[in-house]
Amino acid sequence: MPGRELVDGRRQCDIDPHPRPQRSPTWTPARNCATTPAGHPGRAGAHPVTALHRLWHRAAIAPWERVDATFKGQAHVGALTARQAAIVTTATACCMLVALRYVVMDSDVQAQLGRAFVHLVGAVVPAWHGWAQRHESLWVHLTWITGCIAVYVAAPAVVWTALFRLPLREAFLVPKDYLRHLPVYALLFLPVGAVVAVAAHQPDFQLQYPFYAGRGWADQLAWEFGYGLQFLALEFFFRGFILRGLSAEMGASAVLAMAMPYCMLHYGKPLPECVGSILAGLVLGLLAMDTRSIWGGVTIHVAVAWSMDALALAARA
Image (cartoon, rainbow, N blue to C red; front, side, top):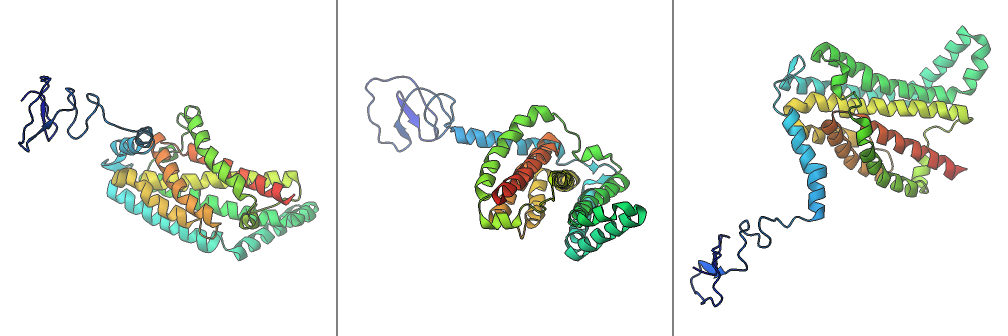
C-alpha cells in the first residue's frame, strides 16, 4: 500500500502525496521512506546511541568480550585443566589471605620481628646497634611489607611454577604495551587523585595515613620505597595470580570473584576508601586481563598511595 508501513517496522516507500486513511490495525502512516530497524525510526540504518552508551561499550562491554574471547573455555592453564586451575587458585588464595590476617597483620608478630632484627644487627655489627634501635619503628613496619611479599608473591609463585608449570610472566607480569596505555592509566588516576586531595583534610583520613612517619627524609624515602613494593606484590596476587588462575574456567567473570576478597581487604580503612575499592577492583581487574599486564594497576596504586602519604604529611606540617 503506497505511503504505509507495517507496525512491526517494515515499510513500503512508494510516495502517495494524498494517502487515504486506512482503518486496518495492521497499517500505520509512514514517517519517511528510509528503511530502519524495527522500532527505531530515524536515519537509515542508524541506532540512537548516545555518547555515554558508546563510552560504556568501549570501556566496559568491549573489553569484557575481548577477555572472554581470549581466555574463557581454554582447556588448560599450564599443566592444569581449567577446573583444576580454578580449584588450586582458590585454595591458595584463601590460605594466603588467612596467613595475611592472622600472621602478617598481627601487631605482636610485627613487634617481635622488629626487635629481633635490632638484636641481630647488634650481634653482627655492634657499632650499628644504636642506629638500628633508633629506627626500630621502621623495621616493625618493614616486617609487614616483607610478610606481604611472602604471602602475595613468594608462596603463589611456588604454586605457579610447581603446579601450573608456567613462568611467572604468564601471570600478567610483563609490562605489555605499558607506554601505549600510560595515558589511560593517567586518566584513571585523575578522579581518584582529586578525591584523595579532598579526603586528606578529613580527620579519619589523617588518623589512618601515613602508616609511617619517618625520622627524616631518608627514613621516609626508605619506607615509601618498601610501601611501593607492597603494592606491586598485591597487584601480582589479586590481578595476576588469581585472575590468570581463574581465567580459563570463568573468563572475565574472574574479575567479579577477585573483587570480593579485594574489597574485604580494605575493612577497617576509612569508609570512602573501602567503598572505592569495589570499583577499583573491578576496573583494575578488567584492565589487567584486557592488557594481560598488572603494571597499569601497579602504576595507579602506587601513585595513589604515595599521593595519600604526601598529602597526609603536608596536612600534619
